[in-house]
Image (tube, rainbow, N blue to C red):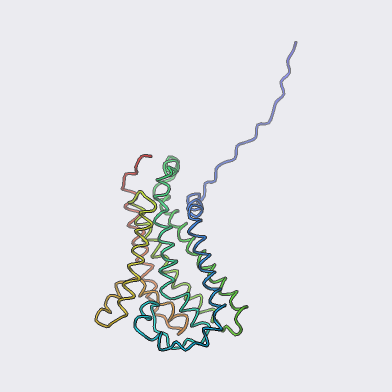
Length: 283
Protein backbone atom coordinates (compact mmCIF):
# COMPACT_ATOMS: atom_id res chain seq x y z
CA UNK A 1 0.00 0.00 0.00
CA UNK A 2 1.18 3.42 -0.86
CA UNK A 3 1.53 5.78 2.05
CA UNK A 4 0.84 9.45 1.83
CA UNK A 5 2.56 12.04 3.88
CA UNK A 6 0.88 15.19 5.06
CA UNK A 7 3.16 18.15 5.42
CA UNK A 8 2.60 20.23 8.49
CA UNK A 9 3.72 23.75 9.00
CA UNK A 10 5.86 23.78 12.10
CA UNK A 11 5.43 27.10 13.92
CA UNK A 12 8.53 29.18 14.20
CA UNK A 13 9.64 29.36 17.84
CA UNK A 14 9.35 32.75 19.39
CA UNK A 15 12.59 34.55 20.00
CA UNK A 16 13.50 35.47 23.49
CA UNK A 17 13.32 39.11 24.35
CA UNK A 18 16.73 40.68 23.89
CA UNK A 19 16.35 44.29 24.99
CA UNK A 20 16.77 45.30 28.62
CA UNK A 21 15.66 41.92 29.97
CA UNK A 22 17.96 42.24 32.98
CA UNK A 23 16.47 45.63 33.82
CA UNK A 24 12.94 44.25 33.70
CA UNK A 25 13.93 41.26 35.82
CA UNK A 26 15.53 43.59 38.38
CA UNK A 27 12.27 45.48 38.75
CA UNK A 28 10.30 42.23 39.03
CA UNK A 29 12.66 40.86 41.68
CA UNK A 30 12.26 44.10 43.66
CA UNK A 31 8.46 44.03 43.55
CA UNK A 32 8.08 43.50 47.32
CA UNK A 33 10.18 46.46 48.55
CA UNK A 34 8.96 48.54 45.59
CA UNK A 35 5.35 47.89 46.55
CA UNK A 36 6.14 48.75 50.16
CA UNK A 37 7.75 52.03 49.14
CA UNK A 38 4.78 53.04 46.99
CA UNK A 39 2.31 51.97 49.69
CA UNK A 40 3.97 53.90 52.50
CA UNK A 41 4.52 56.97 50.33
CA UNK A 42 0.88 57.13 49.28
CA UNK A 43 -0.30 56.32 52.81
CA UNK A 44 1.73 59.10 54.42
CA UNK A 45 0.62 61.65 51.83
CA UNK A 46 -3.04 60.78 52.30
CA UNK A 47 -2.72 60.78 56.10
CA UNK A 48 -1.26 64.29 55.96
CA UNK A 49 -4.40 65.47 54.15
CA UNK A 50 -6.62 63.65 56.64
CA UNK A 51 -5.01 65.13 59.76
CA UNK A 52 -4.31 68.59 58.34
CA UNK A 53 -7.43 70.26 59.83
CA UNK A 54 -6.40 69.12 63.32
CA UNK A 55 -2.70 69.90 62.98
CA UNK A 56 -3.31 73.38 61.56
CA UNK A 57 -5.03 74.32 64.82
CA UNK A 58 -2.19 73.14 67.07
CA UNK A 59 0.43 75.66 68.15
CA UNK A 60 3.67 73.73 67.91
CA UNK A 61 5.95 76.53 66.72
CA UNK A 62 8.13 76.47 69.83
CA UNK A 63 8.33 72.69 69.65
CA UNK A 64 9.46 72.73 66.02
CA UNK A 65 12.07 75.40 66.63
CA UNK A 66 13.92 73.26 69.17
CA UNK A 67 17.25 71.79 68.16
CA UNK A 68 16.20 68.20 68.77
CA UNK A 69 13.16 68.34 66.50
CA UNK A 70 15.04 70.32 63.88
CA UNK A 71 17.68 67.62 63.89
CA UNK A 72 15.09 64.89 63.46
CA UNK A 73 13.31 66.52 60.53
CA UNK A 74 16.40 68.12 59.01
CA UNK A 75 15.21 71.73 58.90
CA UNK A 76 13.97 74.69 60.96
CA UNK A 77 10.31 75.53 60.47
CA UNK A 78 8.77 78.77 61.72
CA UNK A 79 5.38 78.49 60.00
CA UNK A 80 3.35 75.36 60.62
CA UNK A 81 -0.11 76.54 59.60
CA UNK A 82 -0.01 75.91 55.84
CA UNK A 83 -0.65 72.55 54.22
CA UNK A 84 2.66 72.79 52.35
CA UNK A 85 4.56 73.16 55.63
CA UNK A 86 2.85 70.13 57.15
CA UNK A 87 3.44 68.16 53.96
CA UNK A 88 7.12 69.10 54.05
CA UNK A 89 7.43 68.11 57.70
CA UNK A 90 5.58 64.80 57.52
CA UNK A 91 6.67 63.62 54.07
CA UNK A 92 9.64 65.53 52.64
CA UNK A 93 11.74 65.81 55.79
CA UNK A 94 14.82 63.73 56.52
CA UNK A 95 12.48 60.78 57.05
CA UNK A 96 12.03 60.68 53.26
CA UNK A 97 15.69 59.85 52.75
CA UNK A 98 15.70 57.43 55.68
CA UNK A 99 12.61 55.51 54.59
CA UNK A 100 12.52 55.64 50.81
CA UNK A 101 16.28 56.05 50.38
CA UNK A 102 16.69 53.01 52.62
CA UNK A 103 14.24 51.01 50.50
CA UNK A 104 16.09 51.92 47.30
CA UNK A 105 19.46 51.14 48.89
CA UNK A 106 18.08 47.71 49.78
CA UNK A 107 16.85 47.16 46.20
CA UNK A 108 20.23 48.19 44.77
CA UNK A 109 22.17 46.11 47.26
CA UNK A 110 20.11 42.98 46.61
CA UNK A 111 19.89 43.34 42.81
CA UNK A 112 23.08 41.43 41.96
CA UNK A 113 23.45 39.05 44.94
CA UNK A 114 19.88 37.83 44.49
CA UNK A 115 20.71 36.56 41.00
CA UNK A 116 23.84 34.93 42.39
CA UNK A 117 21.79 33.12 45.02
CA UNK A 118 19.26 31.73 42.55
CA UNK A 119 21.81 31.05 39.80
CA UNK A 120 20.15 33.17 37.12
CA UNK A 121 23.26 35.29 36.68
CA UNK A 122 25.14 32.27 35.29
CA UNK A 123 22.43 31.67 32.71
CA UNK A 124 22.44 35.33 31.70
CA UNK A 125 26.21 35.67 31.42
CA UNK A 126 26.45 32.42 29.41
CA UNK A 127 24.66 34.28 26.63
CA UNK A 128 26.09 37.24 24.75
CA UNK A 129 25.54 39.56 27.71
CA UNK A 130 28.62 41.18 29.20
CA UNK A 131 29.09 41.84 32.88
CA UNK A 132 29.05 45.56 32.18
CA UNK A 133 25.66 45.38 30.49
CA UNK A 134 24.32 43.13 33.24
CA UNK A 135 25.45 45.57 35.95
CA UNK A 136 24.22 48.68 34.14
CA UNK A 137 20.78 47.21 33.46
CA UNK A 138 20.48 46.21 37.13
CA UNK A 139 21.45 49.76 38.09
CA UNK A 140 18.93 51.28 35.69
CA UNK A 141 16.23 48.96 37.03
CA UNK A 142 17.00 50.15 40.56
CA UNK A 143 16.76 53.80 39.49
CA UNK A 144 13.44 53.14 37.79
CA UNK A 145 12.15 51.71 41.07
CA UNK A 146 13.09 54.99 42.73
CA UNK A 147 11.30 56.96 40.03
CA UNK A 148 8.17 54.84 40.45
CA UNK A 149 8.10 55.51 44.20
CA UNK A 150 8.54 59.24 43.59
CA UNK A 151 5.76 59.39 41.00
CA UNK A 152 3.43 57.46 43.31
CA UNK A 153 4.06 60.05 46.03
CA UNK A 154 3.40 62.97 43.68
CA UNK A 155 0.19 61.28 42.55
CA UNK A 156 -0.91 60.98 46.19
CA UNK A 157 -0.14 64.67 46.77
CA UNK A 158 -2.32 65.47 43.75
CA UNK A 159 -5.15 63.52 45.38
CA UNK A 160 -4.58 65.59 48.53
CA UNK A 161 -5.58 68.72 46.63
CA UNK A 162 -9.09 67.29 46.30
CA UNK A 163 -9.25 66.50 50.01
CA UNK A 164 -7.81 69.73 51.41
CA UNK A 165 -9.47 72.97 50.46
CA UNK A 166 -7.08 75.69 49.32
CA UNK A 167 -4.05 73.42 49.58
CA UNK A 168 -2.09 76.10 47.71
CA UNK A 169 0.65 73.79 46.49
CA UNK A 170 3.22 75.34 44.19
CA UNK A 171 3.64 72.52 41.70
CA UNK A 172 6.80 73.94 40.19
CA UNK A 173 8.56 73.84 43.54
CA UNK A 174 7.02 70.49 44.39
CA UNK A 175 8.63 68.96 41.31
CA UNK A 176 11.90 70.66 42.19
CA UNK A 177 11.62 69.21 45.69
CA UNK A 178 10.92 65.78 44.25
CA UNK A 179 13.99 66.15 42.02
CA UNK A 180 16.11 66.98 45.08
CA UNK A 181 14.85 63.83 46.78
CA UNK A 182 15.45 61.81 43.62
CA UNK A 183 19.08 62.99 43.72
CA UNK A 184 19.31 61.39 47.16
CA UNK A 185 17.67 58.26 45.76
CA UNK A 186 20.31 58.23 43.01
CA UNK A 187 22.97 58.27 45.72
CA UNK A 188 21.20 55.46 47.60
CA UNK A 189 20.99 53.35 44.43
CA UNK A 190 24.71 53.79 43.70
CA UNK A 191 25.51 52.90 47.30
CA UNK A 192 23.44 49.73 47.10
CA UNK A 193 25.01 48.70 43.79
CA UNK A 194 28.47 49.12 45.31
CA UNK A 195 27.73 46.73 48.17
CA UNK A 196 26.01 44.29 45.84
CA UNK A 197 29.03 44.24 43.52
CA UNK A 198 31.26 42.36 46.00
CA UNK A 199 28.81 40.64 48.38
CA UNK A 200 27.10 37.31 47.65
CA UNK A 201 24.16 37.55 50.05
CA UNK A 202 21.23 39.76 49.06
CA UNK A 203 20.15 40.40 52.65
CA UNK A 204 23.69 41.18 53.76
CA UNK A 205 24.30 43.60 50.88
CA UNK A 206 20.92 45.29 51.20
CA UNK A 207 21.24 45.50 54.97
CA UNK A 208 24.72 47.03 54.75
CA UNK A 209 23.48 49.70 52.34
CA UNK A 210 20.50 50.48 54.58
CA UNK A 211 22.90 50.75 57.52
CA UNK A 212 24.85 53.48 55.75
CA UNK A 213 21.61 55.37 55.08
CA UNK A 214 20.69 55.09 58.76
CA UNK A 215 24.16 56.32 59.71
CA UNK A 216 23.69 59.31 57.39
CA UNK A 217 20.44 60.12 59.16
CA UNK A 218 22.14 60.00 62.57
CA UNK A 219 24.92 62.25 61.32
CA UNK A 220 22.36 64.76 60.06
CA UNK A 221 20.44 64.60 63.34
CA UNK A 222 23.36 65.04 65.72
CA UNK A 223 24.99 67.67 63.50
CA UNK A 224 22.05 70.03 64.01
CA UNK A 225 21.93 69.71 67.80
CA UNK A 226 24.82 72.04 68.51
CA UNK A 227 27.25 74.26 66.62
CA UNK A 228 30.20 72.38 68.11
CA UNK A 229 29.59 69.37 65.89
CA UNK A 230 27.85 71.14 63.00
CA UNK A 231 30.74 70.08 60.78
CA UNK A 232 29.16 66.62 60.76
CA UNK A 233 26.38 67.92 58.52
CA UNK A 234 28.59 68.50 55.50
CA UNK A 235 29.95 64.95 55.52
CA UNK A 236 26.45 63.48 55.48
CA UNK A 237 24.45 63.09 52.24
CA UNK A 238 21.18 64.33 53.75
CA UNK A 239 22.69 67.78 54.13
CA UNK A 240 22.67 68.09 50.34
CA UNK A 241 18.96 67.20 50.05
CA UNK A 242 17.26 70.17 51.81
CA UNK A 243 13.78 69.26 50.63
CA UNK A 244 11.81 71.15 53.29
CA UNK A 245 13.50 74.46 52.53
CA UNK A 246 12.90 73.86 48.85
CA UNK A 247 9.21 73.05 49.24
CA UNK A 248 8.24 75.53 51.95
CA UNK A 249 10.67 78.44 51.59
CA UNK A 250 11.33 78.05 47.84
CA UNK A 251 15.08 78.13 48.43
CA UNK A 252 17.66 75.82 46.93
CA UNK A 253 21.41 75.90 46.54
CA UNK A 254 21.58 74.54 43.01
CA UNK A 255 24.77 72.52 43.37
CA UNK A 256 23.69 70.59 46.48
CA UNK A 257 21.72 67.89 44.58
CA UNK A 258 24.57 67.52 42.12
CA UNK A 259 26.85 66.49 44.98
CA UNK A 260 24.54 63.52 45.57
CA UNK A 261 24.34 62.70 41.86
CA UNK A 262 28.12 62.77 41.46
CA UNK A 263 28.61 60.73 44.65
CA UNK A 264 26.07 58.14 43.49
CA UNK A 265 27.70 57.99 40.06
CA UNK A 266 31.13 57.45 41.59
CA UNK A 267 29.83 54.72 43.89
CA UNK A 268 28.07 52.99 41.01
CA UNK A 269 31.12 53.13 38.73
CA UNK A 270 33.36 51.75 41.47
CA UNK A 271 30.86 48.95 41.91
CA UNK A 272 31.01 48.27 38.16
CA UNK A 273 34.80 47.96 38.26
CA UNK A 274 34.64 45.63 41.26
CA UNK A 275 31.93 43.49 39.69
CA UNK A 276 33.88 43.10 36.45
CA UNK A 277 37.02 41.96 38.27
CA UNK A 278 35.58 39.66 40.91
CA UNK A 279 35.20 35.90 40.70
CA UNK A 280 31.57 34.88 40.83
CA UNK A 281 30.84 31.95 43.16
CA UNK A 282 29.72 28.67 41.63
CA UNK A 283 26.16 27.69 42.46
